[in-house]
Length: 335
Image 1 (spheres, helix red, strand yellow):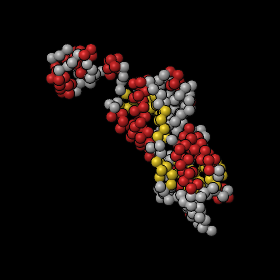
Image 2 (tube, one colour):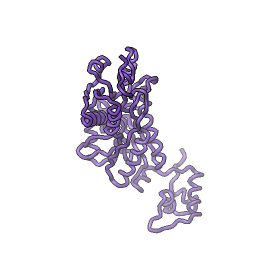
Image 3 (tube, helix red, strand yellow):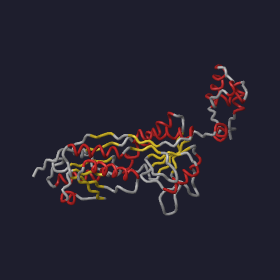
Image 4 (cartoon, helix red, strand yellow):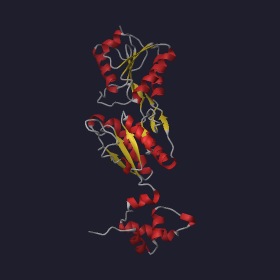
């Protein structure tokens, strides 16, 4: 078996002290010690030629960092039906991790018996990383409370309610995004609105519904919330603008209206509140907003590095982008 190279080996081959190799590896100039450019170049050349990799445990003892960021997913992020939703988050995470010189470690194995994934279990490995990013529509409240209570560095992708203390997060400003859509519909003359979706449970759902209710109240118009409503119920209620929490539900309403001979948006306007989390028809150009998923992933890594360096508690909401589709317009009944 080939002997693992050590800093002493690198020092011997470069003709310098082990302390010099350590300073070069960690890019430090302790106590004002200056390493001559030629000496630094010679050490780096030996490292390059030998393929030397610093012992991660020793490196961590030296600078208290592994430069490994964990990514804990509360839901499977790679199945076909959800790949399009989570992929931009992961791309943003990867891009920013590379930019700051960190590796990523995906945690998937921790799972409570007969239940969904949990961070803390007998097999938990979350402490292998310097800090952790949390991804998932819902996050276990006990996990959050333990993370906050033990001071484990982490950032949630998505706003989270307090869990024994503020939860560091980078999320989307759903309240403002939904209010903007209601404002646009009201400006076109709509006065009877319906919110279709859970509106409870996950913070992202609650924020959407809160934005809807705030805007409806501000305009003094009618607004109903139904967990899910078929086209018949909405038409009977006289709703003219429907806000669908789930994109696939909004697309289904548009297709059902077309099959019945109704005009969209003349008879019924339908708006989407984000991105599809399950398969949706691609031939329906819904008006709505786009979640800045890639940017959320990038910013979450930046926020986690700030948590690690400064002990901050970031709480940041990014703006969503309006999507100009074909399903919002003035209410002009065709019959």
